[in-house]
Image (tube, rainbow, N blue to C red; front, side):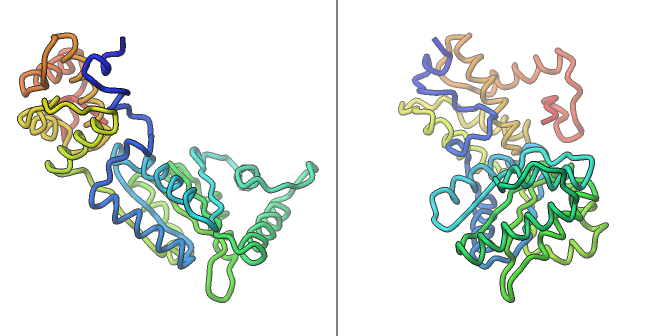
Length: 289
């Protein structure tokens, strides 16, 4: 039997997979999602979402896709890894991602641009659709790919961009963009995801347990444990999920009833003894995120 069923759960509550059903929306996450939807409706073009490792960018992207799927009038696609060595390969990948039909003959960069332009004008003007492209791990984009995206953002009507582009990336994405003033000028919205505070950490843990089917009045995480988890993870959602998963697994192994501070401290000590190198921000826990 899986450990979580022993605890009265129907499924794993603290997986680090980007499942939108388990995406806890802090105030900041809700604000970013609402702002992106407004940008799409106004067809403003380029939005940038920045955040350190583990702040929830990828899961936010999956949640955004889920929200678009529930609305009419949107055509949306997600690029998970934008690492391409040349402009033509990047254009080719975009065409395949967008599902653009074309002959299989050799293509030049100009051919790719024309295919994408015709697609965007057809979807936007003839079919009255809003085309949304999300690029995760956008900090991996090279200069040629960023220039290719700048060209796509040039396709517009008198009052609207034909492509709504969202770049989700780590903080090093910003200096990459700043090197290209002609692209930076096109940024309509820039948001930064921050770690959770203590109350949000508590709410995230409760939310995930409830989504996983926990219904008992007995708390699985005592307040003292939540405070220690917050202190050790500094509110980074991915780190919280990882530590909570280990805590519940340890709770079952010890036949305990609730995770307390001592159990969390025990896990942290185990990590240190196993040779994890503590980061500057997590001197006690050794979690690097």
